[in-house]
Length: 621
Ligand code: G6P
Image (spheres, rainbow, N blue to C red):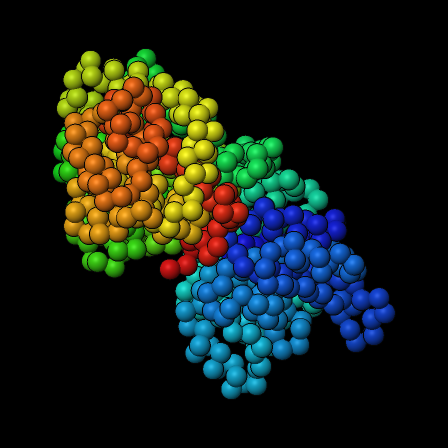
């Protein structure tokens, strides 16, 4: 949600900024802009000798590129931004950068300034004029005020004052005509990193933005301010005390953040799932036993666990629901699952004998972050499950289990989801072994099965053409109902979420047993019912539910266990899923559902990587 790239160095920054913004497109945005510090051709003696050139446009970065194509827009210091509208519609005036009264200070910002209205009022009284509807515009004007007074002309001090003044969230980056050898930034709650290279330094919202220039990064924490120059970075707290922090190296390759011949990132990422699952398990099973050093609890503490609390948003919430089923079944520990945005405001009872797990692919979701802060304040020990090393939630948790799915660029979570689900299976089994709640031979059999799950996912992917055919025949339907029971239920929710996210078709995920309490009223010839119906202990109940909707003229697409001839008799379309243990069926069922959503969306010519209105990491409430 909003993306920032900034550069100061010895290279021309125009392409660095544009390419960096393109790599942040996955975060979701609706307008973009860049500003550079350009030497004036004939400066007057009183001039700083520079001007800030700016170009902004509603729409996509390619629209910005068109405008840039025949412009002289060169310089070695610049800032860029993709905006996801919160205050004010997506248009050129509201796009970033925003300026002070004299066009001398340019600011880009990711986040929300909650007290912007009162700040604006104060500034208007002092004679400041505003030209946009954004909250961000108060920031360059505030910096202008501070530079005149308390900050004594120093840009970094102005940034420190500003962070003390604002409420809300923000990664804020500022460029000033009168400070041509530095860019400064500050952070409250929105992600901000510094990229370090021999040819200059960078600010960015996320590492892929500058991965082609450097693999060395420094993470910026809340209430820190930073000055980058061509060959140095300095981090300070709000009182101006310097903070020492060395860069660390990331191993992600540029290729892993590119499409590698696939039509879309989403398609590529779905096909990377066998790898992501395998990588996430790698090194955690030795001699047939799970090792989970990240779970920072002694065996005795595990045996005494009274409860596990899991929180998450979006797709991660569906991994959490799977976690509940598995942990309760195998380890016999009660698990409560909450949506983060509900948890943080519902005044939860936090039990110190409880293990608290936050699941988040990005590690930046604002509601999940706020929820873990709330829980930790009340004494909980938080364990994060995330895909992004060094993300805010990873750093603010007591322990972290990393999924190793590799960078996920498509807005829809696919490979990070199956990696989360495999972590849920591993946690369940790990706890069960210590508690002695799963028989040793069953434990071994589950591990054997987990080890071949990636092959089974591959088998499903090899059959993607069959799913495409079903999508080609059904994409014109206007109502989709996804039904499942027990292990199939979270996947029904996920299948419906995927479909609505990228096709914009109305879809509902439901526990099949709830169907008669409402959704059955929707079923007629326009409806496709997608039934997740493995041959498990609720198979017959699911079959009855599918027959009931069939009797009401809905078309049925059933995900069946291979060889299930019986369901095939009732369904209009079937896709066979390899046999597995019933508890593990979910991770296999979700893959055809992802593919189905993808091919329907492609039939409708949707942008699957950047669906409208959505963002990869939701950093505002
Ligand atoms: C956004 C993304 C979803 C994701 C959700 C939660 O809505 O588009 O794909 O599931 O945020 O994100 P998290 O990073 O916390 O898993």
